[in-house]
Length: 554
RNA sequence: GCGCCUGUAGCUCAGCUGGAUAGAGCAACGGACUUCUAAUCCGUAGGUCAGAGGUUCGAAUCCUCUCAGGCGUGCCA
Image (cartoon, rainbow, N blue to C red; front, side, top):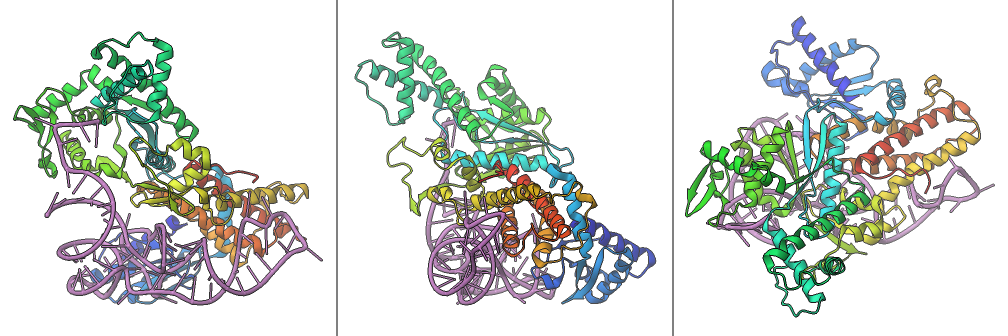
């Protein structure tokens, strides 16, 4: 609706220039907005105010000229007004609003999808947790965010690939191997000293126990350089399998799993360094190789190859991001924990070193999650290695609630996740509030079907009876869904959908309490049923974007 | 010290990229079930948008400074 209107306004402006009633020829970025107050119409534009300067006319005078032109565009408008300093307020014909329901019905599962992405190829890389331990609640927020952003982009017409980058090459794998190996030796009765920088969690002991079963005492007295790589590989594989399981239970599916090690195996890391060296971005100092990231706005240069000849993770990142663009992605979108924000400038430097626009790399920073139970903080790390895992949270509150809660706030603000609230089945819990609206509509349809009130063809029915304030408000709000999806996609902000859904559910519940759908008047019932079908469809489409189910019964 | 994020109602947060009288949910108070799901709804109350300047027709939104909180600042990942 907004888009059609935008087209109209632009065309009218052009007409004004053609007929000479306006002279500057400037077509500004026309903004159509929904006014805060309904007395100001369904939509408003400030275009007359924007043109005041170039036209050297009073805004209201310009508005007047435009409005005359707009009125010739037929019966889209019930009324067009000039208000305040020069706003043009549009009141859309109610029948136009009512008819919009039929197009929602026709679009069905596609309602909300658009083409703003224009087929642009994008890759969303998210979670990418090191395979050295299970996913914790922070990874959960990253997983929910990355997946929802990917879904939104896909709905907005982007071609999307979801990827997980496995950091299986750094010295953290060595540490993992050592940790498992030491626990293995311990289980076999050896007295060990477990270093602080090794992984402390109990999951290490679980893996060690499996390996005792598998190997017996075969590695007990083996030299470190024989044992540790074996334990690192097996341990990493077991943990990665666990991560894959946890993500699957969370409903997150990555299209590709990209191993850092393969970059080394294929010589890509060395290749990337050579390339950057040729381009003059890398220099040698104090026995190490440095990337001159300061050329691209970083605070200091970064080491690529250490004095001992070992590459840093940053060297892998050069190769990895080069590979992303070579695979044809227009944008690489990385979802990171906010504690990594310091790495943004150096990654942007890589992208520019590759000869690309820094905007081809988008980084979404996801802030911390604080876990609460009835408002009281849950201790996250009383001692090293103890944390709340994603699995524990999903097992306790369920996938839907976890997903929705992770997406309830803007990702760059910290999130309070209350376990008890997430489980509660009442208005206080936004997930239930939204899902309940969907289930309630389904239940009405069940009853209506039994009574034979559901029309064979909704396109044939008259909607003129939909005239109550609650009905029109619901219809108008349904119309905002596509632009909400587009805005959420282009700004990488899935929380816009959670807010939209809560408001939509609220409008529905308000309508429900005030009006009866199943009643004496079949024409009115039919019209209301269509309204509710469109509402349920939109709720479902929105929930699915978030990875939350739309139950038919609760 | 420097960098990034945040600061909006008692609490948790939105605010559509600069618009008209700043919104919602909890919590508080007062109401509504002979009814398609009361797992719901309606109403009341609640504000120096951290503070001070600036930009302009117009600022919670953009710029500068100050204050407060979080995070980061490794030849670790």
